[in-house]
Image (cartoon, rainbow, N blue to C red; front, side):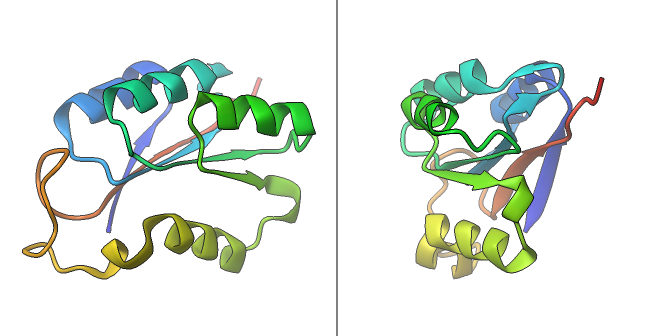
Length: 123
């Protein structure tokens, strides 16, 4: 698995333009702005690309906004464990997470599992 990191929506867009992405893992805050606009953009540009949103804001309206923007999973940072994170990723990717590169379709570019993650810009 290869993980690409982005500290802003501009960096994330560069990855999406150049790489094949199998899963997007976004903090609710991408860089210094909400990731919802970028999440909706991803959903429009790459239909079917699964996205998981991580946040400390576990309010029902935040969950709803994330789902409306295209997130397939929502993880609360306060209760997040390594096992829960792994289960969410495997639950979203399913069997394709275990395919060999030769067996994977090249829907978004080069073969191989690629995950986009981002680091939060704390103020």
